[in-house]
Length: 345
Image (cartoon, rainbow, N blue to C red; front, side):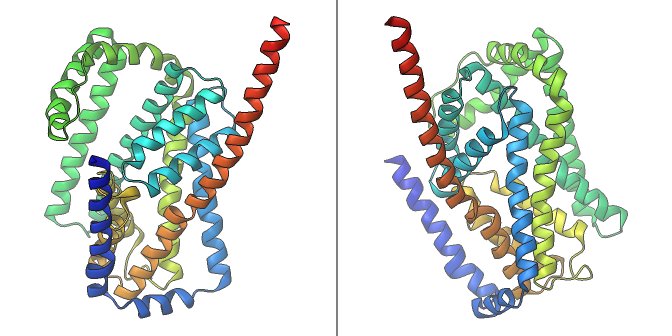
């Protein structure tokens, strides 16, 4: 029942944003005309960038999971993204499907948990760092007020604390135990708020995470960091290119201003209000980019094209990837059954 209510709430939020708020900002007819004015070369270049952005997610998966190849990673990332973008609580369901796909390729649950945690932590670090970088660039150019500078300082503090906690957890078992207990105290009230059962023994859980993570990071932390940065930067490049192709010039919205809007909207969309932040991202990005100086029709056109490329486009690709995985999984199951029969025969 809770999922039904969550789905209804998500639909209500999406409907209010697209049918009430955005039409009050701009006429959809003007937006459509702006999009139609793009040349086929501009559209093709955006498609190429969107495909490359999807590929970077597979690179991150391969970097964090020894033994995984790019074809397998592509099927996993596209399928989980499609689920996250279409279903209420899709993030959790996507993780479940992702785990099942990993298991079908022969990975243990322990290895799967470690790779997911590491990629999640690295993505979080990058999400926290990008607003700080954007505000620092704006401050250097004289375009950041006291409020933005204060936000940047808060962001720096949060990032430093996060990195320190992570470093403490990896440095020693005692540090991991302390960090785990602190996490349990912080997350416990949130779990109660969302009526989720409390998770016990956070301290020992972080200690176990430390043991299994150290070896992976010792050999692959540079690859994982580079891949995480590439996935976020290429996503921003898709947005920036879309802005320029629909007519939002650098004199209206500079690339540091676009980066600031992108980075803060990414933080807001981390809260699972709607699948993939649908509606929330569009409204937040529109407000931030119009405030920076972009024309309303051009900004909304850019944001909608960006979301089609990065939110809608992966959904059918994810369906195709899932079908390929199911076909391969059936073949692998038949092969294992045949091998088991040969051994017992």
